[in-house]
Amino acid sequence: MKQSKYSLSRPHQFLALGYGLGLAPKAPGTFGTLGALPFIFLSNGWPIWLQIAIAVVFCLVGFWVCGKTADDLGVHDHPAIVWDEVAGFYITMMFAPINWLTLLVGFLLFRFFDIAKPGPIRTLDRKLQGGFGIMADDILAGIFSLICLQALIKTGYLTI
Image (cartoon, rainbow, N blue to C red):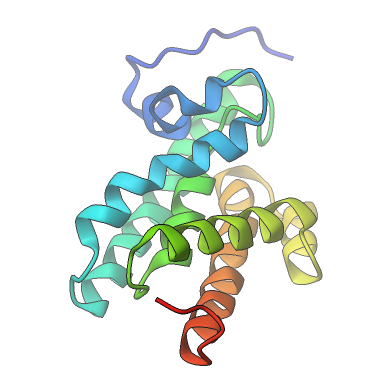
């Protein structure tokens, strides 16, 4: 493994490491997921097309910053790389009314799909490499979580 120190002064590492949240000694992915909160709060109520555009930008930027940081660290999908969690949780919360309950349920859904990696999420995680591989499984986990969260809201199981 290539020895390289983290450097939050390097813009790509600052983003890939979730502004430093990915450096948490325990559960860096869980802490990194919280890095999406400022963007979720900021874009709450914005038009759907703009929220989708933001998610696309997060993903495109993530392909590069995650891949470059993995190269710097010499480890594919190093646990400290959490921009994929930021993007995935942002995707989960698109279109949802934001309150403590939707945030909690969305967070739990996303962490479930990200950790358990059912079906096609596991396949993406195993088959793809580079920045695209780091991001792809979390993007799909975010999409699955978004669908579940919206279903809970629309059916009334999640009262908002």
